[in-house]
Image (cartoon, rainbow, N blue to C red; front, top):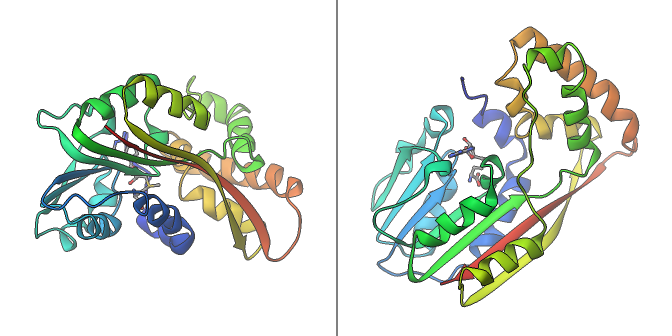
Length: 256
Ligand SMILES: C[S@@+](CC[C@H](N)C(=O)[O-])C[C@H]1O[C@@H](n2cnc3c(N)ncnc32)[C@H](O)[C@@H]1O
């Protein structure tokens, strides 16, 4: 299946999308001379910031989208490298001092299975730092799911329904404690975004959650899906300019 991730669309809200990365990075303790991995690294631009900030000797940026990784070679070097691969099969032979992931694990199913593997990939004293959106109960996300259930989109998706694997913050806190993490900081944070108008909410989700449907639909069917999505979503959002888009995210940091 071709990936619908598009760095240009994703970067349209670059500042808003990078703030949680910096908040997550702020929780991480430096690992001078250590090894780090950035799961779902995207273009690699922020992985370079991560690599330098934590003073790692070696950092791997891993992503399963060739399009997102296209420019990553520009950021590689000085111990930073990139590779194509999936979070879903993360099981390193050599443990990392830092397993970091910003806005990516929401694409991996079964967090009850995934998080123990992330922790297993950590050396003693290693840190796990994960940020994931938790906005699936906002109209922008609910309507995306509902329209996917309407015809002709339902037939086009041939039985596919998007399952959101993201759990409540306290679920992650309990899981990490049960996995023996010695310290942790888990929080839900609301990021308030001032978008030019409510129409920009569509542009926002086009760069992320809608890519899941885009890659499963023929272009003309996805165009019809987008039109229907817009028609159903916009009346549910206030007409204010700017439009205030509250976006919830879970930030997780824990030390083994
Ligand atoms: C919202 S972007 C975040 C990119 C980057 N971490 C950042 O902070 O800008 C999500 C990234 O996760 C990647 N991704 C999604 N599912 C993945 C998987 N199963 N394995 C690896 N990468 C994945 C996508 O290709 C995309 O680059």
